[in-house]
Image 1 (cartoon, one colour):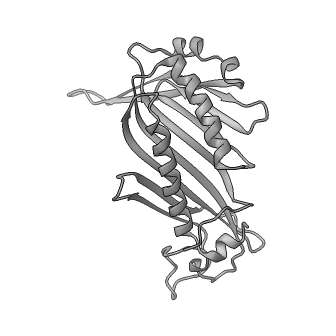
Image 2 (tube, rainbow, N blue to C red):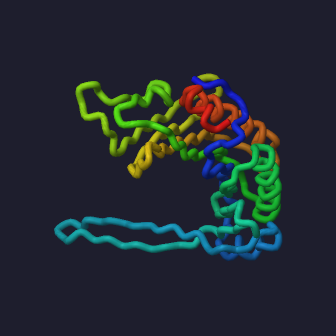
Image 3 (cartoon, one colour):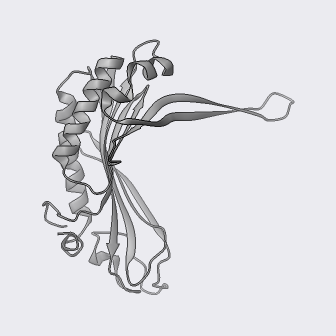
Length: 248
């Protein structure tokens, strides 16, 4: 594993904080739009968030039938400099920081600010889930036949007698922290496109916890801080020192 520390050129392509809620009874998309305007956030409105529902039925003695409908469930807002994206939905909100990633304190401060506006305007009943997710795009200087173990700990490697040129791979674990019950979705993926001796690998760490908290409970942010620590442990536990040194 790599030593935990700040990486000045961290390969983060998206970092986010997500809070899911049970909305107050009767909350509609129209009420969300009226109560939560772009001016309140200091962002501009990018467009609605739409969810589609497809239903399938098989009547006795009849032909299979499908139906679909779409509903607007939220609004996507962007900061004027396009570095932050806020998704405000009936079921919660997500704040994403796009490149260049700065630091955790800035992300948390902005998420706290927008969450307060969201909670004050929409008065959700309960907070049911919190998460922080970091998507990294690693660019590794690997040659054909080199072992992935140079850069990742315990990644399933190519058998010695098999062809050594890897076109793509996908590895995913859902992990449980036995001490807190929090979970981590850990995904490693190479989808192709290696060129000039550089192998692009996505390292996606999604740490989350189920909760039952009131919208004003400080434990929301205490839990998110613990999830951030869990994310860091997972990230640095997945890569080797050789990989970390590429981004110092």
